[in-house]
Amino acid sequence: MFLAFLSLSLGLLAHAELSPYTLHEKRTNIPAGWTLTRRHDASSVLPLRFGLAQSNIHNLASFLDDVSHPDSPNYGDHWTAAQVAKTFAPSDETVETVKAWLISSGLSPDRLRVSPTKGWLEVNATVQEAEDLLLAEYHVYTHDSGKEHVASSSYHLPSHITHHVELVTPSIHFNTVISNRFAEKRSLGTYMKAGQPGSPGKGPKTTGEVNTFLTELEDCDKQITPDCLRALYGLVYEPLSGDNNSYGIAEYTPQAYLQSDLDMFNRNFSADLVGKSPIFVSIDGGVLQTENQSLGYNGESDLDLQYAMSLVTSKQNVTLYQSGDIVQGASFENLLDALDGSYCTFEGGDDPEKEDAVYPDPHSDEPGAYEGPEACGTVKPANVISTSYQYNEADLSVFYTSRQCAEYGKLGLMGVTILYGSGDSGVAGSGTGCLNPDGSQSANGTIFNPSFPSTCPYVSSVGATQVNPGAKVTDPESAAAQVIFTSGGFSNRFAMPSYQANAVGSYFTNYKPPYSGAIYNASQTSRGYPDLSANGINYVIASNGVFQLVQGTSAASPTVGAILTMVNDARITAGKKPIGFINPTIYSDSFKDAFNDITNGTNPGCGTDGFSAVPGWDPVTGLGTPNFPKLVAKWLLLP
Ligand SMILES: *[C@@H]1O[C@H](CO)[C@@H](O)[C@H](O)[C@H]1NC(C)=O
Ligand SMILES: *[C@@H]1O[C@H](CO)[C@@H](O)[C@H](O)[C@H]1NC(C)=O
Ligand SMILES: *[C@@H]1O[C@H](CO)[C@@H](O)[C@H](O)[C@H]1NC(C)=O
Ligand SMILES: *[C@@H]1O[C@H](CO)[C@@H](O)[C@H](O)[C@H]1NC(C)=O
Ligand SMILES: *[C@@H]1O[C@H](CO)[C@@H](O)[C@H](O)[C@H]1NC(C)=O
Ligand SMILES: *[C@@H]1O[C@H](CO)[C@@H](O)[C@H](O)[C@H]1NC(C)=O
Ligand SMILES: *[C@@H]1O[C@H](CO)[C@@H](O)[C@H](O)[C@H]1NC(C)=O
Ligand SMILES: *[C@@H]1O[C@H](CO)[C@@H](O)[C@H](O)[C@H]1NC(C)=O
Image (tube, helix red, strand yellow):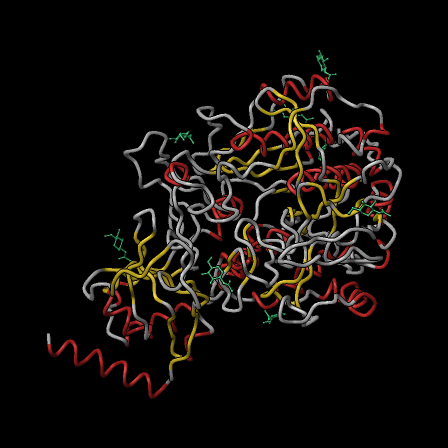
């Protein structure tokens, strides 16, 4: 015992001389709802996992530019999944360097295991061993709900290891999943993570039932129908490419659509879709639960599918990615694992210390628990994928958001367009208010609170607009400001991508916001969002057997997805590739007049008016709303 202890400390000491430790990750606050209970027992065992640094990841932006920039000779030459996996797998040098460090620190080689894709190295270590390895202290934290979580407030790595490791878990990451079922018994919002996909009660905002349809285009200021959207954006198009094209909508259990709602909507707005369902793809036990029915449980799925299916017409199928079983639900990572096998952590399991649900479901005693293996590379991604949920950037750790963001970039390399609604809280965060100087979020915070994944430079973020009260469908729209305020602003984490440097630069030159750097990232070097926008106010939907009006960027995103799917149809019919990652293209000079520039309205929050919509790109409505005829003509000119 004494000897073992001695050799371990000598090992660490020797290392410390060769390679001093540096701080790798640190947390500045304990998230709301959690209390530090005690120091963890030194002899408890932790499943310590090292997320190994991916090769070539620093070249991702230029790889993506190469296949997505309209001036690139390789425009549209998207990569295969195998090419992506091979290019970004951690190098043998990385795997061997981290292994050698662990072995020299006293862990025997037979205790180390590398995941099949080489992305992760796992070792079961005692708390004492982990604390020595990482110069960290592990504590047990208790949630108000009674759930316990093991975490450290910081950890270190030897400096020769830091560039081989992206993150270590468990450590500072504090985003454990509180099961939907449990949360629901208590007050929602306190226990659910803000923006957690599938949270009941996270449905679109409604302003009540509709008893009379206003079917004239003059009434689009009061009710948005598919015809209003076709009129607003010039979407007159009949798709021809059939199953050679695809459009995916992501939903998270227990959120589910009702066929009776789709049929009710379609009887009035898209007669030839009555009886038609989306193509159902179940990921990690994804089911269409019918036990609970309400706007909160069905509204988002009903909305997304009614508009996606209606706008692409009966001649184009829509695919529904339904992720998660009834017990755990799922996170964006569960969907990403299904779309890209090289992203999966371990055989059949994601990382429970983060935001993600684990499959096979460990709650096998509960009815509805999915006991099959986690979906890993089993789903071929659709050409366009729209998601109407989001987190706040500050809900998630820096390493977690950057790893997930890179994954969106890889899907872009494969030719997939990834759309996320920008959020419905103006410059504030969804649910949790604004930021404090220490990075925590509270109702009385004063710092703008950007949303994620919208701040990831490899997704296309969609804001919301409105037809002004009393205005015609041919009049210019404004930023959405009824019931919701469209979200937009600047990331606190992600650097400004080159494709938006000119647009954002001229925004700051001509319309510098009247706020100091103390309340938003005014560095002019960070990612601005959204990228584009579409109407998100007063959508007529059928949900739970009644027609009602709903609002949100969650309406705008599936609408933009449908429009881009029709652009893909035109390209595919012409023998060309799908549009893939659109940002370098839509910000390019040749696409300048392909959007209806929105120049009126603001996105208030955090005690301010927020930013203002202005000529050109702005952090409220992005480049503006799509002009379909121009977009399709321009995209057909590209190779
Ligand atoms: C860690 O322990 C768990 C539970 O005993 C086991 O399933 C897993 O295979 C172990 N992992 C390693 C790398 O030894
Ligand atoms: C339905 O709601 C009840 C009561 O809130 C809850 O116990 C149950 O878990 C919910 N079921 C699903 C599938 O979400
Ligand atoms: C789909 O693509 C295949 C191969 O290019 C082609 O033979 C087929 O006609 C296409 N289908 C439609 C509906 O365009
Ligand atoms: C839609 O999918 C169904 C079922 O896979 C298929 O039979 C049908 O041909 C598809 N329709 C179109 C327009 O691609
Ligand atoms: C919707 O369609 C149904 C069935 O065709 C019809 O009875 C109803 O009047 C329509 N609703 C409105 C408000 O037009
Ligand atoms: C903000 O609210 C929190 C409770 O949510 C309170 O503890 C804190 O003192 C408040 N801060 C200010 C500056 O009012
Ligand atoms: C602003 O964004 C940049 C990313 O370009 C980041 O490095 C910086 O830390 C951010 N500043 C603040 C105050 O969050
Ligand atoms: C600007 O937007 C506001 C709502 O935010 C609206 O009331 C007003 O009519 C709009 N003005 C113009 C000129 O579009």
